[in-house]
Length: 384
Image (cartoon, rainbow, N blue to C red; front, top):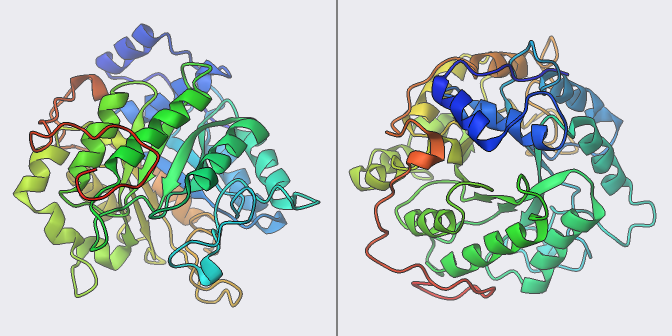
């Protein structure tokens, strides 16, 4: 294992002293080390570790453990890890709008599985990184998902696992023809997570996966961030796409044009860049675009990054899954692409965020002059 060395930035050291953050310790140290990577003007690698729940993914976890903090002499670019045991807690949710038979293929695992194989495997992997990174548990947040299902999954991560410090809400986007609501519900569940995990100050983090960026997203960011402007923090996935569409628009994607919109930049760039994660899959096997992706994500105010060469079209059992293994699992030598990403993530980048003291310098404009809707567990409609 490796460990973040003390940052060279004066303001970062001052923040660490103010918060009482340690170096290579457990408990509080787990957040301190992760924070050091995120608060610098480098990238932080955040890993959606939805890997195969068997021995074929053990090399991937070993590679994560190698790059995770562990000794005071080594810098680490590793930020957060998102774990996923593969099912909702009761395995009874059949309302997913896109998955086969409406099944939810993500969450804390099936409590009724007699062997609990997947859950046990995930817990073992969490045990390996406790004290060196912050772990998020995966919860599906699809449109109109029942309250009971969401809360069961959150509570399962909280009560049935050791070492999970927050929740990653997938399928959080609400900018479509059905509904532009959902802000009140996002506020409700971000607060719910903080209440359930808030027994110690360094737990209760929340990350929403919006998969892209659009102006309506401003309301989600403004209102959920306002409920917890500093710690525990709220984070947002504002790009999840393949390498080609990260740089090019076509009939299926307008990510490039959207990021070039002045009205979007006017609010997005007022937030600390460490709040935003970009996920790029279908990386070129040679990794030739790695530097360009890192530069472009910084230009788009995202300091968290994950790049992967998956999916593997030669995997007959799962040819379309970009998260089955770690980036570079199938490369030769193995993980050379992930190692390059980890090394280059520690290079200095320039972000458009104008602050100098991380989220303490945020000064977001008031969202459309509107009041944030009252937190409620229901989905709601337009304006909620």
